[in-house]
Length: 259
Length: 169
Image 1 (cartoon, helix red, strand yellow):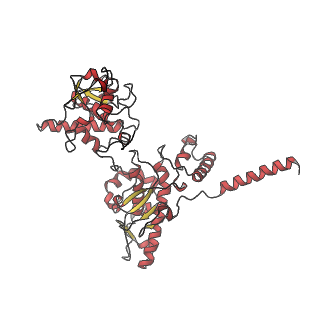
Image 2: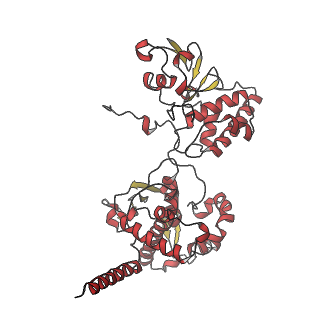
Image 3: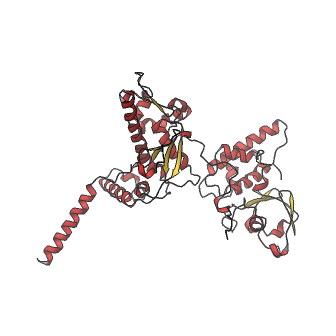
């Protein structure tokens, strides 16, 4: 074989592999339930959520709380998707699986101006960066990225869990999944009423109109929070968990035998 | 050497504080173990170490302890009269969810307390001018809101002829 042929065919093969890998779907961020290490009587629905025996939802929390409120904001996303009161969502420290890696932070660090949004270059770069970040799975809190990163992954995990639960409930109750009501952490059905899915709420469930009517209606939604079955719409300013009172700051905590 | 901190007299041995050049912040944190006051920059720029000396907000990291002998020092530990009798500023801080990481906030509160004593109803501009403390989390908007809320609460209290709680050391 000529040296030229070897080099060119090598380059061609490498290029084909890179293009092929790039076109493959991005790594899923759903994860399997065993990541949640469900104890006896607990039901793990995916890598983000499990349900405890007392009905509380336990979510994997891969981000650090530094007062920025992420331990409140991320459970808000779960509470919203599952229509449960925020108090019913608990957090547990996530493991080190790359599922919990921060993708949004890497994508946001690309050196593009917002004016370039939508261009092929930006879209391609974001796709590739997102793909790489999912492979690397760097679990990191920073860059104002926790909510934007969880916005897709955690909401999708919670919405998928909701669909699983609906399917299970529907077959148990012998009704269509669409007719079920999710309210206060309970699923009921068979009344024939399409509960909890009217007007704007229904639109939101179907993924319509969230972007457009979110801002102007946000204040109204927050004010009438109770009408969302006790769940809390993401974007409502809530008191952050653990802000108050009388805690020693970590850097002033002096442990026994600490030098 | 004798210093009065939060109304309590402390006698400091020369072995602890040397010739009195030890900064007040070191005395508070390392000698007296009052860690509510924070070390930030160490050069009087950030205000994390702010305490009040005879009512005035002072950067304790550059104040030699000898300079406060015979004066009234108030730290964050002395701002409230107890856990159930928080200073109006502390109540406002909780209501407005002011802190983020919280590191600069004890200095912020002491500076705000000094401000409200000299100016019970400061404007936004006056707050910005008086509050020279730096906050890495950027809580400035909520600091302002907290001061306004506390000012209102103190004014209401004063109007109902109650003694202003914790306004002085």
